[in-house]
Length: 198
Ligand SMILES: Cc1cc2nc3c(=O)[nH]c(=O)nc-3n(C[C@H](O)[C@H](O)[C@H](O)COP(=O)(O)O)c2cc1C
Image 1 (tube, rainbow, N blue to C red):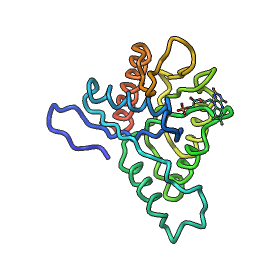
Image 2: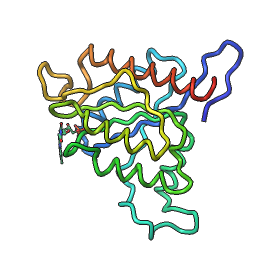
Image 3: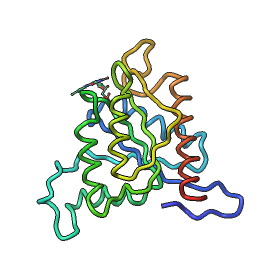
Image 4: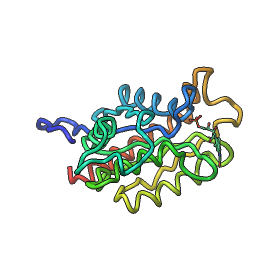
């Protein structure tokens, strides 16, 4: 959770970044890499860590013990618990969130729900509408999880519309998109601090 700060210092927040796509060349993962870079270079106080979800088993409550979870699930839940806020990079799959992301959301929702009362933001690289439908489904899921999403700015990126937004390694190369991403991070930072009364 939030680190203590000295007088006059900028409050620090830890952001857990989660990518809903598991593929190596994922554009959404590229957005998170860019977000990490931006925060390091130009947003003092924001520390973003990519939290992997690929190794989580498919949700099955038979895998739970008396208030315990498989080690990989425990480790994931702990990362979420320790974060001040969440950055979701959510690709759109068939008008909704991806199955890996829903799986991760479900595991961390098991009692005690570790998403509760955290600030969150969503970014998407997808086809036509830039992932908007996945984002609105994620916002709906977040109601029950007690996540608090920033409303503005919204960030929808059509990854396939020229000019190219990513290089061949799926790194973000478009300056305007990078600036849009920075604005999301600044909004998430401000909202997280406001929510925590800091
Ligand atoms: C199963 C599947 C369903 C998809 N459905 C949609 C969709 O409904 N809307 C959309 O804009 N793109 C859709 N796409 C395209 C993905 O959003 C696009 O490939 C995106 O780049 C995936 O994210 P990634 O690059 O991070 O892997 C779909 C892709 C897959 C694999």
